[in-house]
Length: 263
Length: 337
Image: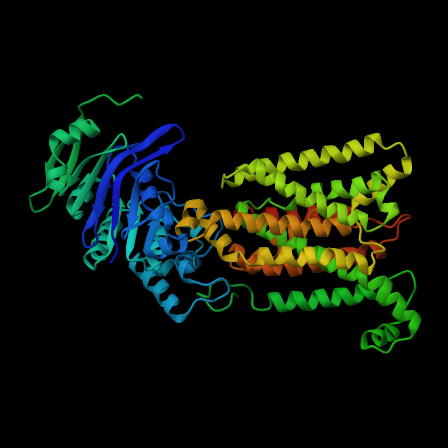
């Protein structure tokens, strides 16, 4: 079990304040979604959670300890990370790619054990890429590659999983698979945080949503409390048909109500 | 066919033993070639430890250092190329991109220019290693704390260009045509007439350099996922960069100090071995080291077999060999490097 506490976190990239004064306690057991328009600071927040970029103000605590004081290897074993649009620089096979997930657990000269191999196979299976294991990952379709990358993150076997836009490029069937998988991970006691753009998926699957705008956390709570018509209008500048309580919850964006921001 | 699936890095089962065997064979052939003809029986007798004194002197004192220097320099260049390609995630990387080769050459050129190498022949390699290390300090200062490969390449180009300008200046100002000739000849790259002293100068550098580079295979694999991906897998990028640059700087500095500028080995060798591996950076390291030793030794055999008025320089031959080999691979593997 692992938890992350964010306390008045601010992050600057260059001269721009990308995350400002965000506080939240992220606990295992429920699926936590981070939503917000492009440029709201979602990915930067997530990178700061992992200690990949330093905080200019406030702090991130991983199980009560400042993330900046924790060795990279320990963070790597605790929080698996699937970056947005993950790239792969060499034409590795899917299996080899997924096996990279075991790196935080391997000593410099040791080899993968039978347990490591079992975890890799399990991860391939859970992300539904077992049949692609011998294919070259850089030659797969975008969606297949995204699932292989997810399998790579799952292979870490960490108690925490942070997935930045895991649904991008996936077909509807696999989108449902991935959301089911994230929910199952959370229900099994994992800390699961995911950045999403699909509001229906966010509303249907997440137990808690963090809505960001302009670097600030503007709402934090259950989906039906966060995804209100007023907020969608204020934050996204859209009107939408919202039905989160019916048998098939859905949010359909209808039209723009506010002009695009040009700043 | 690749070996057992799911091991941490896989390559063709026969690759490493095969390369060791071939490098040993090439080294023995290289020992057998020289100005004085030595019958294979006498050669074998020396290798077995009971040869006649003349043959022993020729083989052990004259030819063996050349063979050892060739193996060491080739191994270092091949390994440095493979490690840099992995670290920079760029198939065109080679030791010269971080300025290591040019900077080490500058020290050697300085030693010739100021006549220090005439005063003591070992001043040349010593000064060469010195400037190689100095360039490394400069590189760190220029690249700063940035972890991006692009910053490092730009800083490397700056260091390399500066060292290149220094070499040109020495040629330009050289009042003595013989000194200029000597500098040019040295720059072409050769392992002719090397003594056991050269072996002892280069060996510690190359052992340290190779040790630093072989250690980081895992981090290079993780870097296939980019900087964030690697850090999220527990890689300390600053330490990785420190080890890698020190390894290349010290190792290649030592290699250039005793051989001059021998290009293309570091660039081509990883491309030659990569198709026989799973293409992960760690799987390419050791085979590149062995194949580098093999290729340089073969090239050194070739310069002695091809009869020209002046002995063909090794660096010239590797450049000529390198280009077509590289082009063939480029065309065949345009999609998959």
